[in-house]
Image (tube, rainbow, N blue to C red; front, side, top):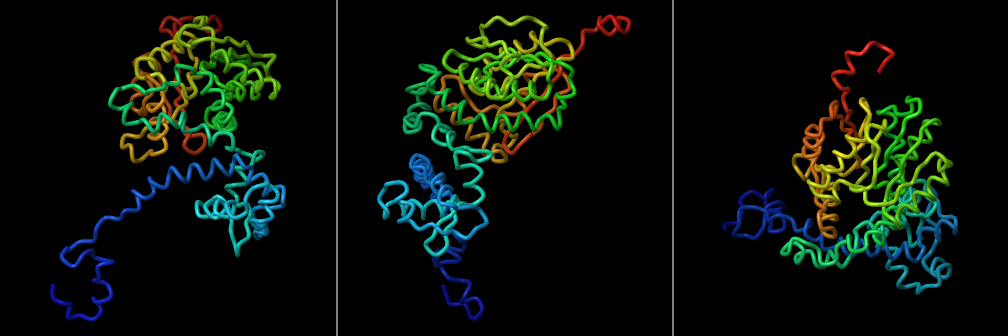
Amino acid sequence: MADSPYPELKKSHVPERVGRPWTDHKPPPSAPVWAVIGGLGSFHVLVAALELGVFDALANLGATPGIPPAVIAVELADELGVSAPHLEALLDSLAVLGLLERVGGRYGLNDTAARYLTTDGPASMASLVPVAPGPLDNWSRLAETIRNGRPAEPIEDDPAEFYRPLVEGTFTTMLRAATRADLQLCYSAMAGPRVLDLGAGGAPWAIAVLKACPEATAVINDLDGVIEIAHQTTAEHGVADRCDFRPGNFHTIEIEPEAYDIAVLGHVCRTEGPAGAQRLIARAWEALRPDGRLLLADYFVAPEPQWSPHSVLMGMTMMASTINGFPITASQVAEWLREAGFEHLRLIEPIGHQYLYTATKPRRPDALLQPKGTQ
């Protein structure tokens, strides 16, 4: 290829900008590939930092967002009882990932670390991070799972072992989502609703309604070994005396028909596959009184998956470790709700990446014909 006769092009038309001399286009960047490769290391960097107590130790040493970083690696290593050179490499990695501040070899907490990664942070994810991906061995065998259509070690073999730490880790986030949802759903305006929370985990949705409605009561269900967490969380929030705890499988436990004003399916449908999710929606329909509302929270995939990467990957997490779990789309859920008979569907996002469908069980036609005051 002849050299350009125009001097200004000599700076721009170079291999680093336009590719190899014999091509006429710039090759695509490899950054997305490297980002995925680095994801494994990034995850373990954060898990190691949480296991060592890095963020809490920095807070104990006075590190505060907005104040110039002042803690050196040797000082923090002494606090934690670890190797200073190795800790410094970890701290630099955390700074590169945007999880710590680093200025002139000194380290401090940024807003993200203080809010999400300290144990006492207002929206702490410290206990969630290590368990959020599910069993790590299942990820290393993902190709085998896809070949066989089943994970080698499904969560269903010992569900309580997996769900206990996950429930504990997600409780703070889910309670915030449930509480914020009231701004749009106004369940706090209800006089004394009766709530059915299936697969409740730590019961964040039931707790949010019970705290907002002093006369409300709730039936809380989850598996043996998991429901004990709901006992603890409801006691901590002062609502346990208004709860009826029913351990067991949410597909088979006894539920009174047309006895509830609110039914909750919080992050359980994507573990069940289409058939299982539809059975749960049908159970909620049967349990609700006319005009009762279903609250179905989950990570819903958008019509184009790339619009909702968080939801896609959370669904993939279920597929990697459960027998029936898959990503579920917003349109799928809407179709299931309508097929079950629900009306007035509404999709909201109480906090980032936390989605909620609300739908209403309509009144029976004969109820509309009754005189006022007799319904």
